[in-house]
Image (cartoon, rainbow, N blue to C red):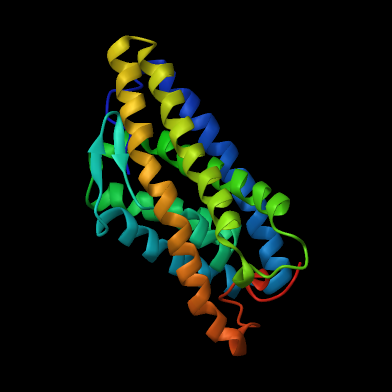
Length: 225
């Protein structure tokens, strides 16, 4: 994923460092909670898994430049449901960094914007999960409407942040607004597809109940809150 180079330049880009630092600090607090609950191995193992998956999402899955950024099937809600918020956040950040370092160095100046764009919607998804999923419902029992609510929260958050960076950097010129609209429209397909991916992965996970205490998996996947 990348926000187009040059979209935000000069002193304005400092804001992206501030927002990325805030997102990173919150991710660290979630990581500390996971370490206290399941131990450091759980965090490390899940982070390695999510980083590898995110790299595949970014680099291997089809992705298309549309307007001011690229459209990816990132599956952020899937990572959250299977591995938890902290490993999903770390995986998104590290996967994006690996892509930038080795395959898309032109993305590195925009790293703060891209990290913010991926992580803040993930944290919004975490909040939404508390609202749309009853405390006594394991994730493997989710319905399509619940998966759709999570996916919509995440993908709408991505579109909103990309739009913010574009307007912040380039203003309300007609060409910029049209590029934002084109990008947002393209993401409607992702919002429809991602819940199906979530439910497919969760359906497969139902057969893994015998490993429900495995620290590599989110505890809530099989157990009520």
